[in-house]
Image 1 (tube, rainbow, N blue to C red):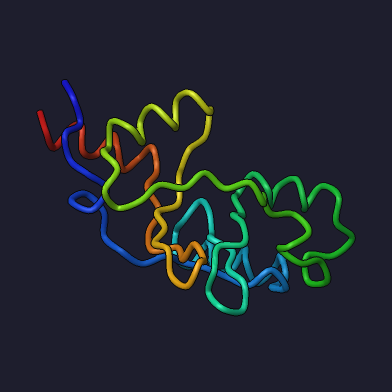
Image 2: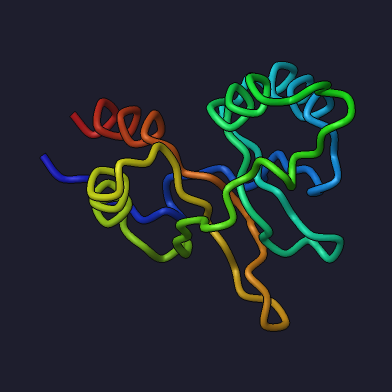
Length: 133
């Protein structure tokens, strides 16, 4: 069975994001409220700056003196794997498995900047496998 859909056909657009200077506590509260496993981190112009996951949160918790005083930017991943809305879900599945990651950020280029517009996760791909069956 193959995933034939493109990212554009498969994903609702919109991302839950924060700025790098958000506190770890604020990010944790937002992740719990939105029931998400990662947040896209954006700069002040809305460009992609990084990604902050639950695993990043746990690592930060283990080393932080205070979640209210530490910021997301100190604990986020800067090297974010991105795709475009025209990429196929098969390509996304290959990226996730070959890189041992759980999600990619869908971006659109605007004014020379990568602007995040969605996130595709391994859970999304499993959903589409079931839907296609």
